[in-house]
Image 1: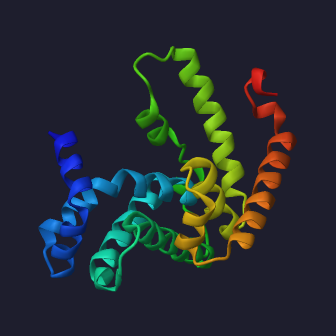
Image 2: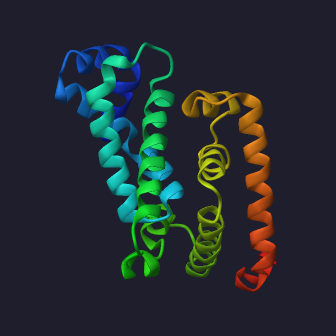
Image 3: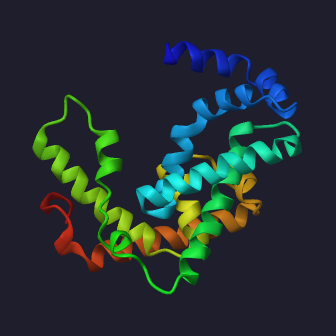
Length: 203
């Protein structure tokens, strides 16, 4: 059922967008169904926190619905991911202005993200090792400046092209490549500085 809905959306996206632009909430909800997983994954890696990612996604879709009339064609996915990344920027800035982080923010692990990625064919020990590596990589991503974090997530986690990232972030290609190079170096340096936390085969 879900697959048929997604296929229907893919082949009729332009018509659905037009309906949403005319004010149809049901049409917009079909777009949400198609992109909510991608939006959450992007937000999760940028925010580094499941609850914060959910909040950012919810705000993103509200903003997208209110501003969908401004969409003028091209890749809707890129347009929507621009809304998501901008919302994440806003939430990160708000977090910096908070007087202190809550205990939940400091102690929350990324188990919810790992659970969604578990393969039924995966051995339990492999799941644990992947989880440990994923936790450390997320800490490294969280340690990046906001602009580098967004570019790294879009490129190396979500596999968007340089041009797509440039469109989403409204930056030049040269800026994207420069930020990505700096982000990769910082992640590498973070991992080298915390080798004792890496699973033994990755050290």
